[in-house]
Amino acid sequence: MTVTPLGDGTYRVEHDGRAHLVYVAGPKDNRWAFWNGHVFRSSGEATDHRRRARAEVAHSLTAPMPATVLKVLAQPGSTVKKGETAIILEAMKMELPLRATADGTVKSVRCREGELVQPETVLVEFE
Image (cartoon, rainbow, N blue to C red; front, top):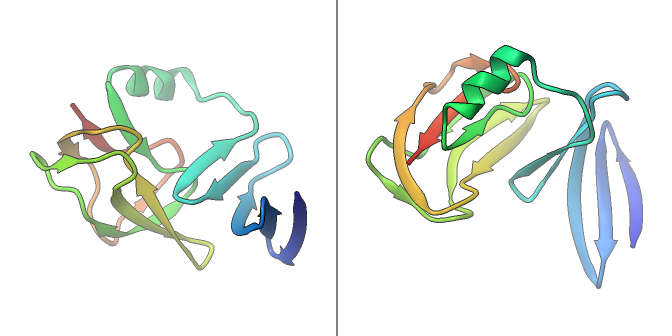
């Protein structure tokens, strides 16, 4: 695997003959990486309030960082397949598509286009 920094938290990762762009942000004690529509966190615990809010939802998509909701593609009652884009956020001049992690039905959409959302905010709930 070869990792090449491209600047401002953007990296080109080459593995098995394929190249991927990975975006990394956050302080050293709470980094997140965005790759292929998925968000990965290195550490950092959610507050008790955020933990409780997420526990009440069987499956949801949350904001990985402060961002603006660019597009809402999922609508309440619609069905989604694993990997399907439900929300597109914009942060740090990049688009962040948030994809469903499992097949399901959209229970509710808790954001609207143009809204500024904070990290760990539940944006879409699934049943």
